Length: 321
Image (tube, rainbow, N blue to C red; front, side, top):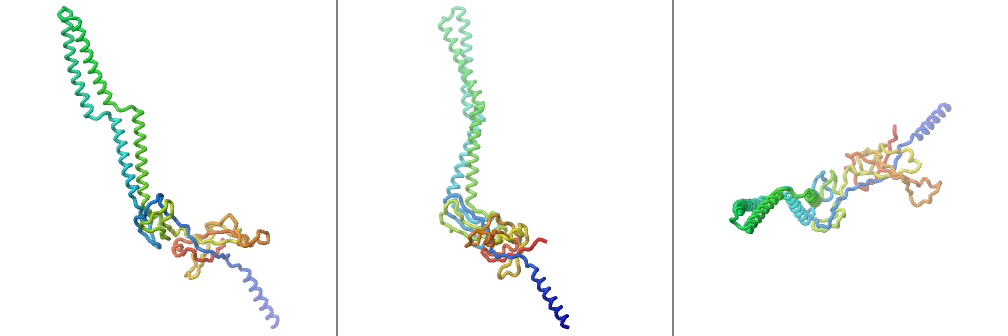
């Protein structure tokens, strides 16, 4: 009986030692934090309307805030009028003079052609009389000069009409085309600036904070609203140097917090390549246990919406199978 009793004790001790060898999953303390989206405005302007408050759930494309837009709207109207003016100038250069101006030149040309015809008849009649000696040489020369003058005037008006019907020189038209394009770009820029006076949610998120109130004048570039999307919630923890080689990105984890009904599933998405030290420490071989690497775990999207920023967590790493 004594021998059997010793065997039982030995067996119990062996089982206890085996149980001690079974290692529990690596566990690290950590905390939650968020990668926020900060929305700002590019000019010094007053806030007109604030359409959301802290804690609101917003959808992608939802209006969050509008700025006073008198300056940007006025700039847009000026640029649109300048664009239309440049387009009209280009059309004028391509099409030639206006119909009314061309009509005046046509009337002048018809009058000049009539006078040329009369001068030609007078020239022909006096030419015959000059040959018979009925008119003097001086009178004949005057009729020749008058006919030439009337004919030259008619030719000038005809050439002027042809030129007015033509478009402007190619270089001038090309220059005006560039002016039109420049005016169009200025108009598009003014439209874009007017659109920027309304802040829109870039994605589904929670309004984490509103930093100004309606009527306040903001400084250009300062954040006005901060948003937190579930995709941007992280749990940060630190890995001791001796355990770094056993962990890698993509490993599954369980995120355990006080008061949580159940652990949240997640995965390691980042391990810092740079070491940190748990102060105070003097770097030496004997103090390598103070060397740690920051890591991040991403919770599942359904769990991320339930996590509060700054909440303490215990990160349990699930070893690879």
